[in-house]
Each structure stands twice: as structure tokens, then as C-alpha cells.
Amino acid sequence: MSNNVDATNMKQATKRELMPKLRFPEFGDAWAVKKLGDLGKLIGGGTPDKSVVEYWQGDIPWVSSSDIFEDDIYTMSVTRFINEKSISESATKIVPKGSVLFVSRVGTGKLAVNNNDVCTSQDFTNFLPKKIYNYFLGYFFIANKSALISLGQGTSIKGFSKGDLEKFEVIFPSPLEQQKIADCLSSIDELITAQTQKLVTLKTHKKGLMQQLFPAEGETLPKLRFPEFLDSGEWETKQLGELLLGHPDYGVNAAAVTYSEDLPAYLRITDISEEGYFLCGKKASVAIKATDEHYMSEGDIVLARTGASVGKSYKFRKEDGKLVFAGFLIRIKPDPTKIDSTFLFNFLFTEQYWNWVRVTSARSGQPGINGNEYAALLIPVPPHVRESGGLSEQLKIAECLSSIDELITTQTQKLDTLKTHKKGLMQQLFPALDEVQRWA
Image 1 (cartoon, rainbow, N blue to C red):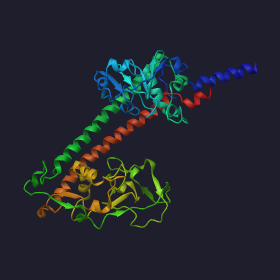
Image 2 (image 1 turned 90 degrees about the horizontal axis):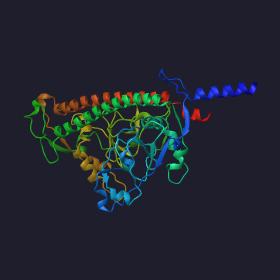
Image 3 (image 1 turned 30 degrees about the vertical axis):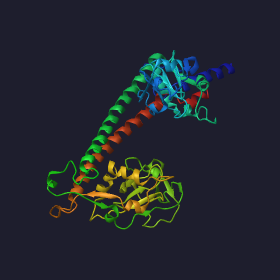
Image 4 (image 1 turned 180 degrees about the horizontal axis):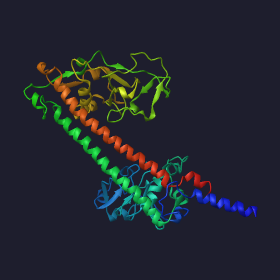
């Protein structure tokens, strides 16, 4: 009798573990567990010889790992196409539409469902579903991305094999519930796509506006000017060093340590986004006795001086808190009587600036720009208009671009909120894989 009770309790416990925290009301059955290999067929890919031009003159999409996006099962950016001959004379093969394309090397964890027949590189292991809904499976693996990435860890080449995927245990409900879950998450993905497009449009608008508000290289007038400054005369170029309070200075030469409220927060190159914002998600500290000179202050800008990120910039914001800047950054302090800090910061995102960075940073080894070179950077500035307040055209341009930045920030926050909502929803719509495997 006791043994029967124990077996019943174990069965009930297993059933509980095989159900997600959040369920649509019309479903109540426990989820099933099967190896992926029992639910369909897995095939690999290959790359036709790139030196044979003829192979790459066709209309069959050929997908590489760089064509797949993180946490997006719908989108692929395919730019290369092959023909039937290249398929017959290489390891690549047709993957029918509706398959799940797993990046199994060089970007493991990424996956997509193809809407058309495609071929893939050898960095893929592709799943042709027979007994499971493809989009449900795609979301299942996004929800369990860490488990997917952990496959094959410890091998010399990071990634996983066809055999690893075949043995991977998938937890799934009835076909109707699979469809319902996939439809729910795809509706959120549609919102994310729409909000992403709005963000891209705003950034594109700002970039185009900047190209018109600043004179092109070699020119003395911008294409677009505010009406009150049309008769203000030509812009002039000045060396950055002439517009600063003192010479550019270098940051602290010390290693980062785990973040602590008892130590100064540290600003490193890796803490700066491509848009020039402070990335506080991986905040670190520096173990020094910081003085006022070590901390950044209002109006300060730092510039990356070496490596792949050379030229990247950040303008201090009070809301980022007190920051000590690291040694691979160079700080400049704009003279507020000569140049507006926000105006200057926006110039650091123009094509003119980045062309200068590419030329100036060229080295035989690691690319870099030192303080003297930054001081020699030519900055286009509008003429002073005394009756309008001196820096007024600079301020007008800075204000215009800042208003777009505010829209971009708001849009970014909306997008981040949607992504956070989706992530939380997925955690509840799928059973926790590590918990279930304890019962499997």
C-alpha cells in the first residue's frame, strides 16, 4: 500500500513539474517529454567553394550564422544566393520552409524558422519538424537558450552537434496549446518589430538631420539653417584644443573591481554604448582614493583612445551618478564661452568626425588617437552672433538634436519594456527546464 502511495505521489509531482506557471484556461493536461530526434529530422549544412563564381549565381538563399538575429525567430538577413549545381557539388542541401535553423557553431543559441526553402552553412544544424509545431519549438529554445548554449561546452570548438540536439529533451503540450502559445508570443514580437522600426526611423531621421545641420567636409555653410541665422555668415573651423578648458587629460590607470557603493563607479570603454550612453547594467568600481579631478563633471566628454572602439564618445550626465573615467579614455572639458558641450558631442557622431578617426587612428599595430591628436581635431563652428547671445546657433542646433534624443530615449524605453514583458511571459509559459529534468 505504501509503495503504491509513493508511486502515486511521484506521478502527481511529475505532472505538476510538467506544467508551466501560466496556462490558458482551456488547457489542463500535463506536458509531454520527448527527445528532439523523435519529433523530426536533423540535417546539417555546408558552404560551396567561394572561389567558384558560378556557384554563387543563382536564386536559392544561402544562410550564414551572421544572417540570423538574437532572439528573433522570424527575421533573416540573407544576401547570398546559390544554384542547383553548387548544391550537387558541395555539402550544403535544401532545407524546406518551416524548418528550425539552429546556429550550432559561431553564434550558438541563435535560431530562426525559414519561410522559404534555403540552404545553410556548416555552422547550422537544421530541424525538419514532423510531430511538433515549428514556431512553438523556436520559442521553446529561446526560453531555454542557456541550456542550448551549454550543449557541447568543453569541446575544443564551442558549439553542439547533430547528436547533441537529437538527445535534447523537449517539453511540449498538445498541438492546440502549442499554437496558442506561439500565437501569443508572435503577437508581442509583432509589437516589438513595429516599435523597433519606429526607433530605427528616429535614428535615421537624426542622422540625416545632422548631415544637413553641420557643413559637409570642406564646406563653410550647412545645407539646412534656422531662419534667424541665414545671414549670420560662414562657419569656420577651429582646432578642438582652442575650444577647451585645458589640455585633454587621461583617466585612471587601474583595474576594475566588483561594484561597491563604498568605492567610486568606474567608466570604461566597454561601459559606453554606440550612441554614447552609460551602460549601467555591468557597473564596476575602481579601488582608488578619488579626488575631484578624477570625477567627471557637467559638460565633460570622454573619447576612447585605443582599440576597436577608438573615437567612441560619452558626455557626462548627472543621472548617471559620479563616475571616475579609466585610462583608455581621454577627457575634454569644453569652454562654455566658446563651444556648447552638447553641440560638440553631436559633432562626434557625424561622418566628418568618423572619417577623421579612421585616418588619424591608423597605426601599424593597435589603432589609437592620443591627446595631442584629439586637440588638433578641426571642429566646424558657426560664427558668434552677439545680438543673439553669442553661442545661440550652436545652442539652437544642440536643442534641436537633443529633442530628437529625448524621443529616441523614450522609444528605447518602450522597446525595452516590451522585451522585458516578453521575457517574463516566456518564463511562465514554458516549464522551467532544469526543474522538469529532475523528474524526467
